[in-house]
Length: 366
Length: 97
Image (tube, rainbow over all chains, first blue to last red; front, side, top):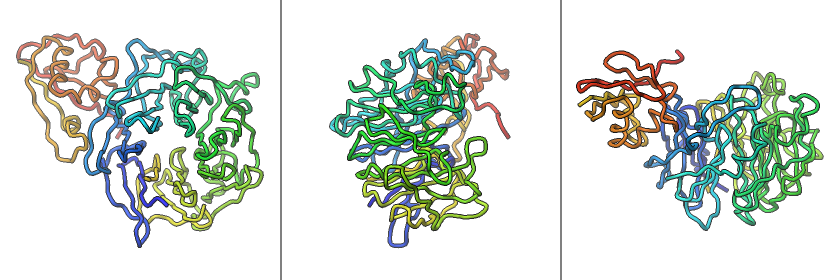
């Protein structure tokens, strides 16, 4: 099991290590700064995405597990590109608003990275973030004109699944822009995801693939054609590489949420952190629970052992629920800074004794 | 030559992982317009470019530049002239409470 966690918070990047006494803070990088995401590459390097407000979105790299940091380039939209959301906001120059997803690409190519951003650009780096190129094959698709923001003013790419069988195949998910697949390293793209539906749209637009709001998409490492989506309007499962999805309607106590985790070898086993749908976004009955299925979504267990069961208003963002390579250890962090871990797939949770700022993202370090 | 004063909140990011209690920095650079002065500044401190201007080269929405004590009004083309003894003060806009 992984004994190290990176926790990206509104007030810094916290490295936690598990020892004899449980999880403890082992290091803090960028104290006081808004760290929105962390990524680790196959060579052991750490990346941190910051959103500094006044000074924009930044990318940092550490070659030594957070001891020292170096500046890396933030993805930049090319001169002349404009952005116009489909919800009627006036067009504006396309500029980077947020780095919302970071994944390593071909592991045989050190420094190959993909970055998903707001307002909807996917970027590629072949030099560890020293430079970036907008993936034009996706950006230039006419369907992008239908994209719009969900909880933000701009659409954004938050999920990047690199196919372990072939790193030239990527599946991504966009809020609100649906699910997309490329099988030629990003040159051409197909808008996929038949079966998802969008209750927030007028009736004639609810099945439109290009306006779906997948909050998060994850892929089973051992069986990459099996993917799960926590969508704005429910949970969906694919067994054909994201081309089609089936609704999973019986998630208890609610089908609304942001995060989803899938077991690395058992594609039918997945976890969710449900909440009251979408006008309120608080735990159902103010009780924090995790919902787990082990049979592909036919049935769910509501896991609450070790989680607060009264007066709890913690919400878990899409990148803040993580599973390690063992498939037994999970962790999640909340908007009120709570952090919980389990070593038995959620049968019992333990709160890490820290009081953090709002947690944006959780990442196990291999 | 004109002087650029970089406020502490900005100057601290000259260090990739900054500490606290970083003071302001004052730099003399050449240039006859705000744009030219900033380009000369970025030539000395390349990392500052992304903190001060966006991809379009416009001053970031929440960054303010004062030229000789008055806020510049052209934040996009940055065309205002800067005289030989001009002082350009770069700092974060006040927003929120």
